[in-house]
Image 1 (cartoon, rainbow, N blue to C red):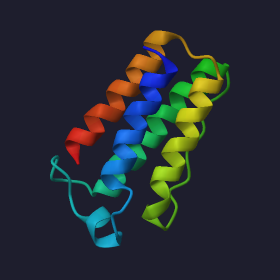
Image 2: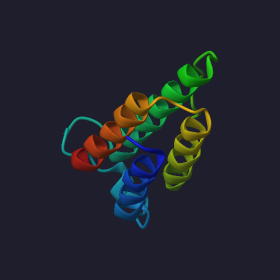
Image 3: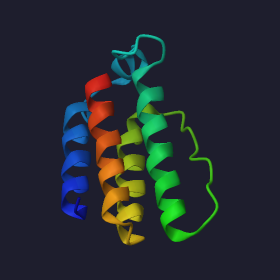
Image 4: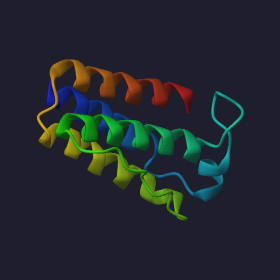
Length: 106
């Protein structure tokens, strides 16, 4: 898995949800028990954890901002950090799989 493939997966998710307004973020996804915003925030946290592991740094909690519209920006940032950390191809593949699974869950 290359950095370009992870970037593409993130881009597809951002295109899918980037125009959403607050009510759409608050609705439940395919999982049916948490909001779509919570699903995407979980993804952001997972990618951030992979980035921290790749950098050899401690994991930190990604803040849950009050404006759900910022979630796509947070995802872009943590994905860029993961790539910049020089993560191994299997880590990039795991991140891309998480992004793809999240797209399906929304």
